[in-house]
Image (tube, rainbow, N blue to C red; front, side, top):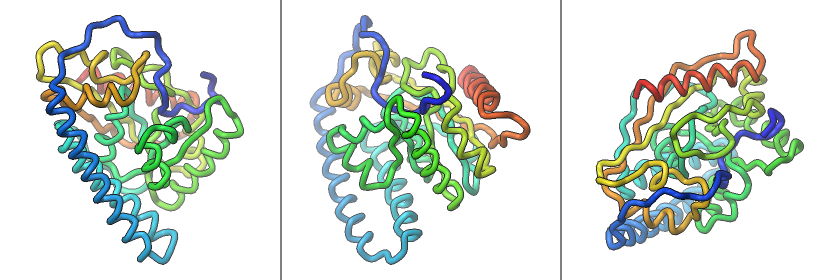
Length: 274
């Protein structure tokens, strides 16, 4: 992916899997699945009702951020994910730049930050998740489309100048977590234009259950398929996300490519220290 391509979350693009997968408790998994589904439906109905009572676009945006943040905090617990957050959540508007292993990163990060997310537009076709993605005004970007990146940058810039925060997965895809892939700089442009900082974030997954391989059982990449992967993940025990929040950094005199390299190195360094 070139600098002109969007470095955002989407369908895994790696080779097929060859590692064995851990055993999962399907009874526990389906219990969590239906619990999450029921909770999500109830929260969505409340959200729709509250949205009808809001009169201004600003109020609707604030409602989306608040309700999505609450939903992700609760959903993280219902899924059985433990979250260890190191560092302070900054005040104000900023771009969040984490490494990326799995769709589970999103609810973990959303439980910590009140922010919007940028993802490739194929997420909109995912069952239920795609519907919620659109209803909560998240930002999508077409694959391999320079024009689409420009439109996305405009939307991200609008959110930043309105005082909101946006999370972008600058690696451009998910990985197994063994290394941080190169950061693509295209979606740093709105932060440059708005003069807001970027917050580097390192996320590492671990699991207490014997036999679990993070690369194969938690990371969502290679030939993994969403629903089977989610069902298996929910049946694992003791999954923990360690999230380290770095210091907000402005571009200074750097162009976006140089800035992207510096942010990548900072995230990689924080991962090594976890």
